[in-house]
Image 1 (tube, rainbow, N blue to C red):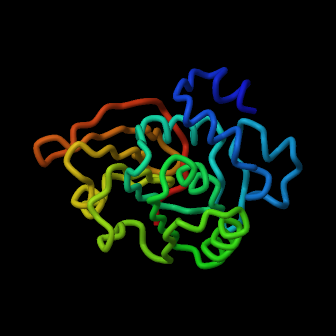
Image 2: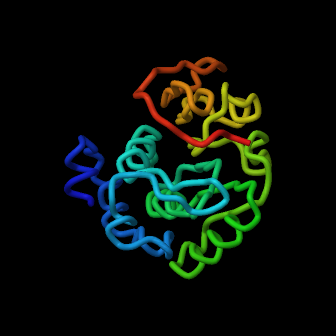
Length: 198
């Protein structure tokens, strides 16, 4: 998976590549066959949610440009796979999930795999997690129609926000924003398809 779908599709950050080589994806998708857990396509995780394909997860993490010690906010814990990737890059990870069943399952999996430093909260991702703000990077794993104001407010000056923007079933764009001079400066990265942010 790493050679084919991560390095093979242009991901070059050595720390990101190492994280994908280290974190066992199949542990987060127990009902999927190994070929499905490691295939380069989204996999259902229940509750009308999916875990994104490995390449898209890697692209989003690379775009977030996370250094060791950065404080990172993840919106949409899902199964916890991306959370574990982030925890491999920095010990300061906060993650928010709105679906109780996914939250509990992800928390148990992360604990079993030794991701003890991750702070996890059940709640509305649109509100972010102000208790630990500001963040060096924020990654959103579901698509809002616009950047939620709370997330913009909780991003540090110079911080990176990676988020898919758009309506379900219509064209969505993966965007990377950097907070500069108190406002977000964005660039379009690639068309994507994500579940809607709720």
